[in-house]
Amino acid sequence: MPPRRWQVLGLMFLLAFFCLESCGLKDRAPKVTDPTVVRVGEKNFSRTDLERFFDSRLSEFRGTDSADLAKSALLDSFIEDKLLLREAEQLNIEPNSQALESMREKLTASGGGNSSDLQRDKDLEQSMIESLKIKEYLHDHLFKGLFITPEECEAYYKEHISDFVSNDVVHVREILVDNVDQANKIQALLRANRNRNFKELARQYSKAPTAADGGDLGTFQRGELPEEFEKVIFPLAPGTVSKIVGTQYGYHTFFVEEKTLAHQQKYDEVENQIQEKLMLERQRGALDKELASLANQVQIQVNREKLDFKYVGARFASRGGKSQ
View (cartoon, rainbow, N blue to C red):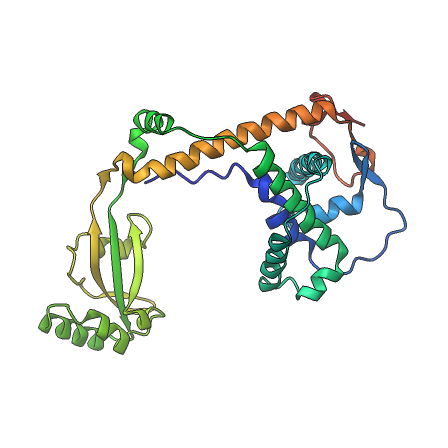
């Protein structure tokens, strides 16, 4: 199995894919008081600013022992965003108009309201603008000039060669019918035509959603299919059909179109994967270094008594920021 795809740059897209989902377009009732809870440099941020950042992301933590820890981690992320935004604005970075319109369209398509709604919601529009400013700052300034050499990729492959073993992979088609007599009839038709008519029979008889595609289920590695299916599918050779498998959904007949046996992946197969992984690590390192530097340069105040949770973070206070 190839190594997991690293997700170390969530901060790059935090506002784009996190705040945009969480902000919503709902109206918020005005509050009598909206105290400042965080100050980053010369800017104050209110409890409402923080709640908007948190919205819809903490439902699984509310009322649990981990709520304070989760909210504290998100408050740290909020501060990180504001530090990066401050740098972007000092460099007079403005969002690309086409990128902003694309972001609006994606949010509209996901059910976040129509384009005119988004433009009227000033908070949401501002969040999108800030997100793009941060993204452009990271791409065009902080990460500019970072690269991974072929020698680094080859060295990583040699040091972690055991990580690059591909499991058995099968490309499978399926015919699903309601009764065993019909399944037996289909098996007979397949034998008569040496399985060459599997796609046509799937389109004609299968009740599965894949029928229109000739029963194409896709490609699977060992461990990705239900055990009862794997037992009959993986022993099959390419071009052969399984025995009938009965489940609560009906009677299944499987056809293995292609099969690739487990093997040690060659460097050429995984070079791009390694390059991407090492680049993400390098970017994460650059980002951590930048945030540490900014936290030491910029005054940060967290007004704990104004928060509606117990802030257990200390990372910015330990780096030179102030936490009250």
